[in-house]
Length: 469
Length: 47
Image (cartoon, one colour):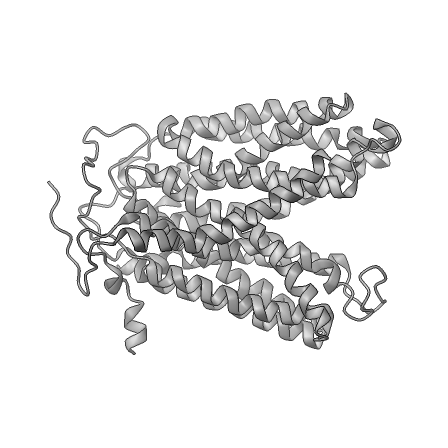
């Protein structure tokens, strides 16, 4: 039982002089691990050729790309659901126990999926990586957020931006690592093209790596504040000194407006990310640019890599900037600038202006990442620090929704245009115009955000262990 | 005026600069490796 008690919130309260800059690395250890989810696509080809043994020539009994795509979809849906369901539990038990649960689920998901690969049973893979791993994703994603906000009341955007930047960075580590592991295990003759052994190895690596976060994380004492920090006594319109519970937050229009803000921003961003490689290849093909001058598959992979970098940098840059600009202004920039840039993309593609096209796409993706990273601070501004982790968890259902909506809209519009006979950049024209319209909806929702009505505020001081009532 | 923090168990002492460096290195090194790998891949776009 001693181990259990070490995980309790009461055992994680920091003493005097604890350096708060140890908290972001603890949060990063979790987010860098679970960010692996964005690199899952590296397994799609080998998973689709486990029977034939040749990714270039799958057998009839091999799993299809559609069947494999469902693994990631389940994981993202479970991310949103578990973040929403376990948010209040997290606030009650504290970040250490939640991080441990996330580590066990996330790595456990790999172990179960490895068994599924070994037995060639897709349902076990769905359950392992999708369901169990997805729950680990959701709990892990929200586990450090409210703790960071409590440690950095003066720099909420910087703090949460650093952690959520890790989610973007996780794929950059996982992708080359997974490829290297599969190459190694293939040569050692472990079977299943090295995928099962790679899943087992990744499960072990992430379990150990996440332990650093588990045992480094601390919560500040209730009355702790950074040196020299004086909370404003004059309440700003959109930054409250009050607290709203997670249950009450759901009753406010502000929560649902921010839900719309997140779902529109993410749906639009996924539209670009989802199609990045074929988009740039089809828009700047040899047929359009001239023989030998079109964008090759390797160059398109470079484009995807560049977008990943801007996704990562945008999370930190925009979220930090929001500490100065204010959250509402920052989201107004995401949407206002986004509308212009999304509407510009088809024209740049039509005029074959590749450099500008790439530059615009990078700015768009930086704001997609920024949208994720700025939302916890926006929630904290509006609802207070009390149960911001739980509120953030519930808002992440918008991400799950966008994860389904984005690809659906993009594929439908793109296929419709192609059926009408359009090719190249023209085949994507309506996709980008539709995304621009979606951003108008987000812009309006953001404009409508006002201070939360005082009737939703908690009366009196809130408990040290919030969800416990 | 801030009061000294109240801990219900095992209070932490002041963290050293060494611990801070190690903590950031633990997460920073893999992150930088991942970023560098992605950057190298991104260069293919400009070849």
